[in-house]
Image (cartoon, rainbow, N blue to C red; front, side, top):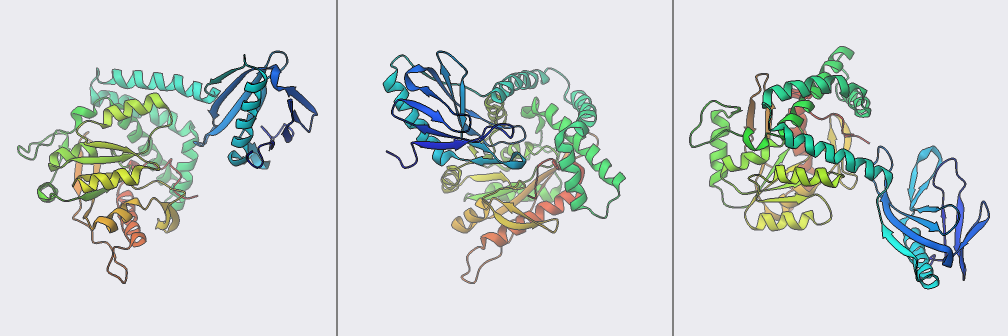
Length: 412
């Protein structure tokens, strides 16, 4: 028997009492409002993962459906004061596993099913609508659709929760700017967001720069960037490329074809599975491999670099398990995998971005290989490298703050 598997405490909400649940020989009992249910009286057990509004964290949840009476709700998400959620997975999982075993032993007719929480069901419907819209956008003119969605987001965006986060972060990053300046940047941010959504439906056709036959088009590349792209294309060893959520960052994956390199892209998988599948389909155009960020991503990145691929990643989001760097003179945490891979492979590091122009075109820019700082032993310093990369991103954001996604909480 796992220690602690016989009991477990839990409170589902601020308005409910905290109860201690105990497994006895023949029933599940609880304190607070004294009660219990016999294992043989449980008709169905439903297990699923639940979430709360405004959080991406998931918690295992179980519902017991008796033959008579009200269903019983048990979860690893214990609500504390101030609506803070405490994760009690370590005690919850052994308890639920033992409970399931006792129910199955006492009632051979009990059904054990998996399901989805109400928020997941809502998101599933929203995902279906989103994917349907994305798949229809290609039928319409890209520029006209972008203009329509940009106007729409400029009206809708300020009413969303992320608008408050964006305004607060802008004030912290640019204390010298007036309230009017801040609102102008916010308006531009939502305008850019609407255009990015419209361009997802046309992503396969947006990149029109051919280094063999350069001509005026949607993608603008000056002579300096073109020469750097040619040099990168002639390299055959592993290389790293970083970018940020500026303008339409999805174009950077398509740029690898113009470099003449195979590219593996690291990405954060959307929570909604239907949207995640659609984004993978869209992003996969011209990409050698898509690597979802997570536990196994460092291994997959190493494998891609060993093959001599170019590995691209976005480096401008908060990572709770990352390292401390300074961004706009404030400490934040960033994923250090780029710095660690640079240290391991001693490979070049490039920065890439696109700048949205008012006429609907994009200016593509590629840095020279950056020179990372080194420790006393001569090895690449991971923290110093991530600070160098973060400072580069900051300089880009300072140039065009209206084209960066300020809705993501960079400082916590």
